[in-house]
Amino acid sequence: DAKTTQPTSMDCAEGRAANLPCNHSTISGNEYVYWYRQIHSQGPQYIIHGLKNNETNEMASLIITEDRKSSTLILPHATLRDTAVYYCIVSEFMDSNYQLIWGAGTKLIIKP
Amino acid sequence: NAGVTQTPKFRILKIGQSMTLQCAQDMNHNYMYWYRQDPGMGLKLIYYSVGAGITDKGEVPNGYNVSRSTTEDFPLRLELAAPSQTSVYFCASSLTATGGHFGDGTRLSIL
Image 1 (tube, rainbow over the protein chains, first blue to last red):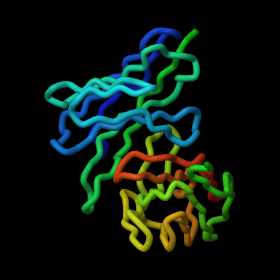
Image 2 (tube, rainbow over the protein chains, first blue to last red):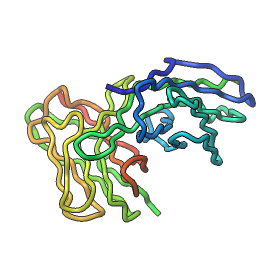
Image 3 (cartoon, chains in turn red, blue):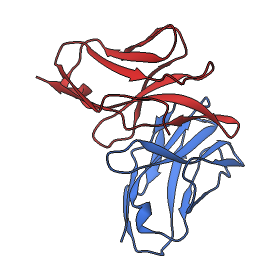
């Protein structure tokens, strides 16, 4: 089972920052937090990942709490095209390799 | 740069038939993955490969087989199709052990 807990759905106004929370209280020291999104049944798209430091790229920012038990993905200026299901995933060590175990994600709806 | 290419995009099979889902990547990635996604759910890992000649089972391998004879190709085979295998199948590749680029998926219905 996935190690992450996310709200089922969220709304955000266009142009505002979208803050998507994720709980991962059982994360281990070497396990990364990944964020992907999936737009209308297309293949998932990588957004960002981090271990313990906050990360930022051209798509989003990732804020990880100091105890690493939760994180927040921030889309700074949400547009209608950001409407998607957002997956927070913790890589888990299985059979000598780290794998991504996916939960059901958060459906983010950006409203005009 | 095509990225990850999956074929076919859609397929309908009868129970008991077999087929191979094709996946090819042109990014010289060592890691490749097959996932399935049922409606309203996240992805579940079927099989993965860390390089040519090496494959390993994921969460839900039963009913599937894979091979990795080249770096570029990672086909997924269904030997005896069952209704429970109706799903959307995604192939992915990555440079490192996690993360990755995904294909557009193969929508498979078993009737």
